[in-house]
Image 1 (cartoon, rainbow, N blue to C red):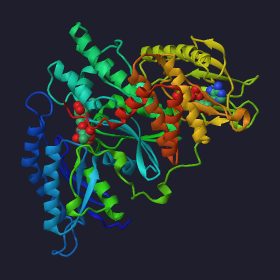
Image 2 (image 1 turned 90 degrees about the vertical axis):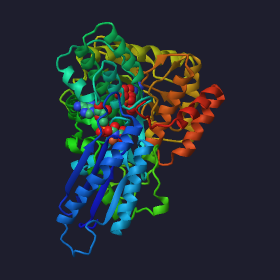
Image 3 (image 1 turned 120 degrees about the vertical axis):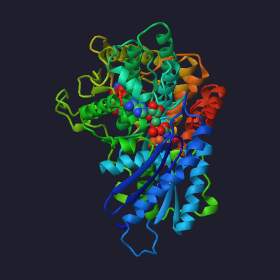
Length: 564
Ligand SMILES: C[C@@H](O)[C@H](NC(=O)OP(=O)(O)OC[C@H]1O[C@@H](n2cnc3c(N)ncnc32)[C@H](O)[C@@H]1O)C(=O)O
Ligand SMILES: Nc1ncnc2c1ncn2[C@@H]1O[C@H](COP(=O)(O)OP(=O)(O)OP(=O)(O)O)[C@@H](O)[C@H]1O
Ligand SMILES: [Fe+2]
C-alpha cells in the first residue's frame, strides 16, 4: 500500500450527514458530521433526504478545508487522491444525494471515485482499529444486524436478523413508550435502574429475530411492568442473543478475533458481554472508538483508501447507488495474502480457562473440545463423550439457568426422537439436568466441516427432511454439528447437538433450518455451490417441496429493512 494515500469520504445512508479525510501516512481521521434529529417518531426518509440535501455541502466543505490545510504538496495538486462515498445499503433518497455530491466533487477535483459498502466499512474500521488479521465481525447497527467473516474473497454473512435491525427494534419500543429518537441511549440509561423479567429469546443457529421479544416487551409495558425493568431485560436478552451468535461464529470459523461495528455498539452493556465472552474463550475483542461505531464518514474514507490502493475505482457511469447493497456482494480485493482466510488451520480450540479438562492420556484429538455452548470431553471410557453446557457469565444468571436447562432437556429428547425417525444420532447414556450434562455415544471420525462431500451433505438434507416430517427442527444444523464416518458403513452421517431444536409445524421453521445449514456451508466450504445443490436434492427425496420453495423465498427476501 502506498503510504501517502489521502481520501475524502462521504456518508449519508440514513441520519448522519458526514464527511471525513483520511491520511494513510499519519493514520489521522478527521470527521465532520451533522445529525438528523426527527421532531417526532422515527426516521422519515423524506425528511432525512432533506437533511442530507442541506447538510452534505457544509460537511464536505469543512472536510475539504481540512484536506487543503493539511496538504503539503504543490498548490495546484488536488488535496486528496480520491473521493469515497457510501453506495448503500441505506435509504434511497439519501443515497442519491450523497452519490450526486461525490460524483460532482470527484469531477471538480479531477480525482477518482470509490464506491463503498457501508456495512463492509463498519467491519473494516474495526479490523483497522484493532490491527486484527481475520476477525469475525458483529455488525450491530440501526437498520442491520449480522455476523460477517471473510472467506474466499468475500465477507460472508454467517448469520443475520430475520426481521428488523437491532437498533430499529429498540427504537420501535422507545417510540411506543413515547421517548424521542434515537431510543438506544435512553434504554441504556433506564436499564441501570431495572430488574430482570422474563422475555423471549430467539436464536436459530447464527440467525436471530427480534419481533417476538419486542411484542412481549410492549405487552409487559402495557401490563404495568416498570419500564426500567423492561429496558433492562430487553438489553439482557437482545445483547445476550448477539453475544451467543458471535460466539457460535467464532466456534464455527475457528477465529479468535471479534470486532464490533455499528451504532448499537456504543452500548456499554453489549460491549461488556462481548468482551467477557471473548475473554472466556481466549479470543481477542475490539470495539472501535464511538465516533467510528455510529454512522460516520471516517470509516468510509479508511476503507476507501484500502480500495483505492487496490485499484477499486468507479467510472461515473457505473457509480449508481444501491439501497439493498449486501456486504457479500462486494469482491474483497484489498486484503493482502497474509490476511487471507485461515483455511486448514481450523480445529476446535482448547478451552482457555482452568475449568478445562486435561486430555486423558490420549492424543490431542481426543481431549476436550470447546464448542460455542459446551465443553465436550471426548476422552471418556467406553467410547462415550460427556457434554456440559457451561455457565455463561455474560448472561443474566436467571436467563442462563433457563437456557441451559431447556436446551439440555431438548437435546436429550430430540436426539432420541430423531433416531427413532431413522436419523443416525449418538445414543444417549446419561442425563444430569442440574449440571446441564449429557453423556453420549462417540460417533463419526470427523466433523462434517473437515470432510465436506456432496454425499455427506446430501445425507444431511435427507436427515433434516425426516426430522421435519416428524414435526420438529434441529435448530442449529451446521457443518460442526454433523459427524461423518469415512469409508466405514458407506460413510455414515450423524446429526448431533439438537439443543436449539423445537417442535413446530411451520414451514417457515423447516425452511429456516435448511437456510442455517446453507449459511454454514457458505461460511466453511471452499466451493459451496455443488454442496448446496446436494443438500436440496437429498431433502427433496424425503421431504416436502413446499419447504424448498419457502427456502427460496427466504433467500429472496431483501435484507435491508428500513425504519418502518
Ligand atoms: C444503513 C445505515 O444507514 C444504518 N445506519 C444506522 O443504523 O446508524 P448507526 O449509527 O449504525 O446506528 C444507529 C442506532 O444505534 C442505536 N444506538 C445509539 N446509541 C446506542 C446505545 N447507547 N445503546 C443502544 N443503541 C444505541 C440507535 O438507537 C440507532 O438505532 C446501518 O448501518 O444499519
Ligand atoms: N457424540 C459425539 N461424538 C463425537 N464427537 C462429538 C460428539 N458430540 C460432540 N462431539 C464433538 O464436539 C464438538 C462440540 O459439540 P457440540 O456441537 O455438541 O457442542 P456445542 O458447544 O453445542 O457446540 P456449538 O454450539 O458450537 O455447535 C462437535 O463439533 C464434535 O466435534
Ligand atoms: Fe451504519
